Image (cartoon, rainbow, N blue to C red):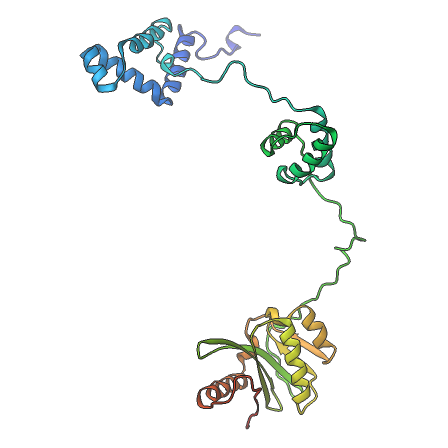
Length: 313
């Protein structure tokens, strides 16, 4: 190979490069340590104003300053020597735990990977009492788990068992439509709930209206839940002069789950709109709500009475 074709490091021929590297490294470590900066500041103040002023200003005695100066001299004026040494003990205490206790903790973690140290504690106490071993604290159990790496959770993809109870569970699919249907026959009922405050007390009113037959029914309940929804629907079936074929609701929680199954036993179809409060979008429903509000304001009937209306065309 030609001599001129060889590649040489750019800084390989600079004299004292290693010393420059050491100085740069020392400056970097010194710049990150606030204690070392304060010590250098005190030494400079001592050299300029003397012992008395330094002791009064910083509360540092001459003996301490001379120790710092000695460290600087021995390190050939490397300011990184002013960085405090680590105070970690040279000989650290080692945690001694009975091997039987460690083995029992491991067996529990292998069987129940998500069992924490607080829940292992009472089980371990029973085991130690049985074996005649000294029990250990919760914090020690945590250290045993961490130091011995007793982590056995499965990582990556988890196998899905199609025969498990979770896979075979029955789910109710929400029926969604984009636009509210326009019924042409009697028996199409819109159902929703209205919140009203009467004399400072909260009341929930379930309301239903036959869109074509103009028959409306309302009942008051103290709570909003599926049980009250089913109870209201059964009352509606008893008082309605028409056969209910379809029920339109919104996606409120009171109209989901077991409620759907019970209602579907009585009607041909149930439509759950995807828009909240979608059952009240029609003008007929707004008219019912306004009529019901006026009846609450202008009449003195008992709140427990169940009203129903036959709206005029």
